[in-house]
Length: 371
Image (tube, rainbow, N blue to C red):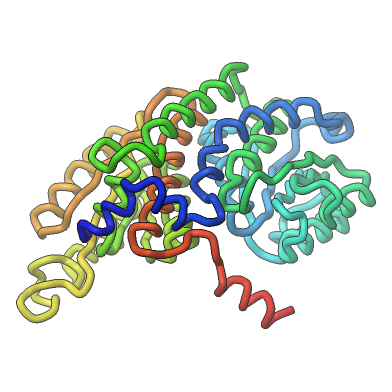
């Protein structure tokens, strides 16, 4: 990373000019999203949904920044959840989904064609349906026509910046169904953690004390391989990769332990590892790997050993390692501590590399071509 790039991150005026769509401000809205979503979801008219009792399974359908809400719900529910929570990122529902199941359709805009298709299929199959998205949208109209429950969301930015506004309604609904044992303070605890990290990562905090700017500088010019160490931090790893893709237009590989130790770890011996015989002339990799480990406070003991040894093996091969540790005890709080940091870092990486974090031209081009 050049000195000019670091200076760009530490000059507030340059930061603002490089972020004309205010993506950093959208990231900073996370705590407010949690509080607003928890309140609006608690006040939503879900009587008909709740009257059906506990479903056999919860199927969350959504795409992109909206679709990750299903993974958040599954991670927060954890392995002890009494019902299956699964996600669908497609036009169609799995064949086993039926009237005994709850389908939650999530779309920030309420216009996502894959989500609308899956939601319409849920209605045809007689599933219970809950819609989460913009009021007055096609998704809201579909829910109204099907006499299904709907939780309205007021977008405070692009869908990728609305993780909390779209995820928290699902958690609230699951808690009201008796599927989650969610302490009353869980939402405020998560919001407070988001505020704490946002203060550390704020634009006027310089790189040497700003963990998000430091992380962005570390990642620049490398190929990040991001591993979670639990189902919860796997969601954070997947989120990090997607945010690097959309905000920084930057490649990344996401994985989770122990699975990554059975496949991705072999990349340590490939052409992207420093000093590898398969590397370019002089042993220099074309783009050096960087291993990023997202640690959870609730790791399996054997996974903790795998994490430690994976870091050692990487270091022995000349691969730089970054470890980020989740903070707190409650699932939403732990997830918040990591996601807020990596969301900021992805925007800072874009700006450091001279990239506007807002545009998604390739996505828009694809939509236009298939319209």
